[in-house]
Length: 119
Image 1 (cartoon, rainbow, N blue to C red):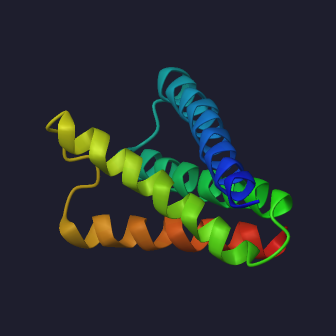
Image 2: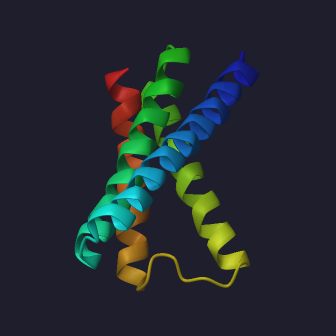
């Protein structure tokens, strides 16, 4: 029973990363074709994080029948944690300042929770 819920969280995180890849490919195409400003790209990347964690939470929430918001929140937390750990391991500062990192963490976690609640 609990393994099913953990499996749904893992599937939600994987779905979120697949969606993130698709959105980032669209942003790369937009950079190539339209040469947008840095602020537009930053908004697009933040949208990718938030929307992907929302969809991942939605996916996990549909599989679990109780406490869906917590499982969605777990998806958002894991989604952010993996991005943060990979960027840290590569020595990159993907989020910039500490305030931005905390903001993205909150957005990913709450986005996943909202997805779980709506499911």
